[in-house]
Length: 263
Image 1: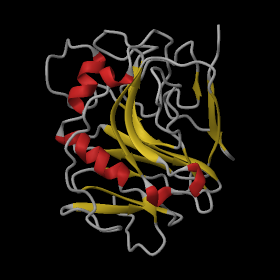
Image 2: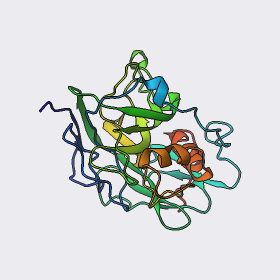
Image 3: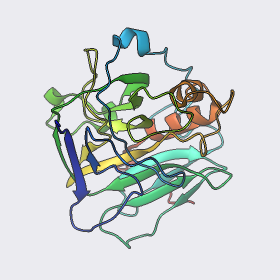
Image 4: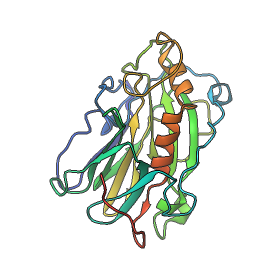
């Protein structure tokens, strides 16, 4: 069996994201835990051309009108080392253990206490793609603010909401899962894609900011019996998703930004 391996590990401390962010293989990643946030696995099923799978990006709600300026009613969180900032809805909360781990280990919860995303830094990254699978792109946007200085030729990281696999069950499976986050992998142009790799370069190594789509956590309209990927497509047009997208795409270097570590 061919094997696709993407690796990510804490550079100086071991930790778990609660999901298989760290090792993605063609054998399939473990099913997503409702309480977890991370990146998923893949499948090797045949796939129609991407144009038949892709859906138009959702209408974007107002985010930061200017760099470092949160939308009305939003707050700004700055990491303990004052390296990164992002904006989040006032009704949500940010949990930060504050130095308990090497690097940042931040969780963002909605008003109902459900985890919408996680921010992790100080992650060593590496990637090898030897197998591809069915995929869908629900949303994508460049994130120029996070481009590594001196690496412009490699392209800026981009925000993406995407899936791998084509199972028709109502919930995520070992081979079919959707997730949103920031990636440094270029957009695919063929009929299949490598496993998801939602990591981007950030000194001293890499970082992650995103989450796994779960109908049990993410408020999704429509019939609960719909296939998981159809629910992910519906979720991309919801206000909750728009808030997640606005929050993640607001991530920026904190230098010169008057942010607060409010929670």
